[in-house]
Image (cartoon, rainbow over all chains, first blue to last red):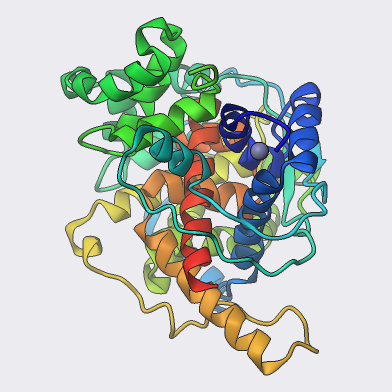
Length: 244
Length: 185
Ligand SMILES: [Zn+2]
């Protein structure tokens, strides 16, 4: 193995982003170089790619022939559109196709968490992975694009009509938005669970941004606690477990 | 693939009163939306209802539509909000459609052996079950990224989270499914 386990851990956190072509060019070169030289990470990558292949093979429901008729009937009930209103929105991103960048097969997961668990002696299933079937890369399922603006800006700006529209739903979404805009006090109480990670990576030394992400994920996923391994995975995603 | 210009052009045409443009948007996007929402709520009738809801909102919002953002991102954001609302309804929490009945993985390769087909179906069923067990936003993030082909930035907008959160959600979702598939291998 050409690099330390820590190197693998950090790379593991970037494998999904590699598949999704979301790494910047320099990082992609680094990750690819590591994967080319490290069979463990190559295996993980194959297993993650395999997930996409399986998902692509799942059956999708056909649109019923009368769905447009039913929609028209409902539109007739609902009535005309709401009052015109215009808001500033962000620039349209350019189109891009999801590439076939990875000529790799296979796949493991858990990767980072398992390795961290092993390092820390935490209980976690770290059984030997089976060898997945080697297959061609997933073809591009849809167009992709890049949007430069941050999600926070989008939330603050509440672009377009959808917040209004969705707010008319019986179970209004604003709850969700509100929870993200104003984290609940409970999020603060999660701190004790962060201690194991602190020992590993020094949470106190993390940039506020990273701590904020941990808290955001905790909120997003409706977790009561950020469990040790979840947090470790987050830290690996962030690359902050490096040098632990 | 839907071209950005085409969708925006259609929406602008609809804003200007061209009802046929709305019909065309429905034809273009009802399939992908139904696939996505069905993956989220796992109930076809509900998914069909929600697809209609999405287009009712598009219809209602036409006057204030502004072509600065990707049309599809806007659609998926509405769809995601509706799906998450649906999942929070009490009746939905216990409803799990059997993953066997709707046949998980069809055979991409006609020449595939029976064993391959059985294997693909088994893996597909396992993936369906694993998807259902994911936290909602992990599921949404993975479906939007790996199936619908949205970028992390678009998923971030649709889920109203940061791009970093999307990266983490997608990675953990994919890792969970990979672990499940490994058990099935
Ligand atoms: Zn490695």
